[in-house]
Amino acid sequence: MSDMNEAKWYVVHTYSGYENKVASDLALLVENRKMQDLILDIKIPTETVTEVKEDKVKEYERKIFPGYVLIKMIVTDESWYVVRNIRGVTGFVGPASKPVPLTDAEVESLGVEKHSVEVGYKVGDLVNIIDGPLKDFQGTVIAVDLDNGSVSVNISMFGRETPAEFELYQISL
Image 1 (cartoon, rainbow, N blue to C red):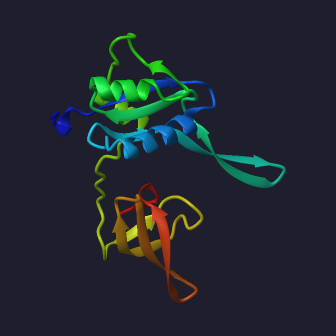
Image 2: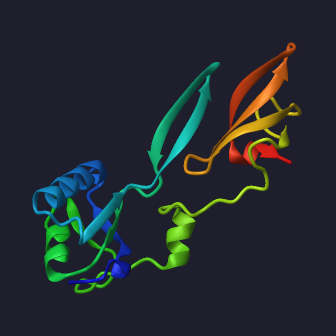
Image 3: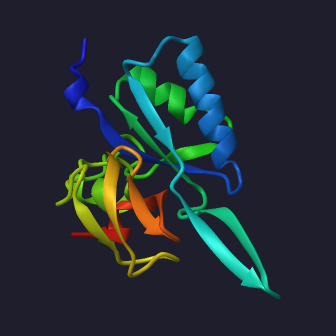
C-alpha cells in the first residue's frame, strides 16, 4: 500500500460551472468506495469579494480558477480512473497519460493548505489594534486561536472591559 507522504495536489479541469458538482460527486464516490486513503482532499479555490453598490455592502464567494478543482491524492490506476470518469471532468492538467502534481511553492501560493502561524504575542500581553474599527485602541490578549486566525482582546471602552475578536494581522505588540 502507498505511503501517505506520496499524496500530492493535482489540478483537474472541469466544464465551466461544474466545479461544485464535480467536487461533491467525487467526495460521495470516495466515501462510497472507501477510497479516503487514496483521495485525501478536494478543494475549489475561492475568495470572498466585498462589493459596495449604492450604499449596500454585498459579500460573495468567487472562484479564483473557474473550471478547475484541486485534489490531494495518491495517483494509482484506480484513483486516476475514478477522478477522470466523474461527470464534468475533462481531464487532469498535464500530459494526457500522466497528471503533473503541483509543486510545494504552487500549493503555498494558492493557499490550499494552511501552514503554521506564529505570533509575537501571547495571552496576557498588552497589544495595539492596528487595523479595523477599533484601530489605535489597546487591549489585553485573552485568547489566541491560530487555527482560525483570530485573537480575542479585552479593550477598555467607556470604563468597562469589553472582549473583541480580531484577525491575527490586526494586532501588534
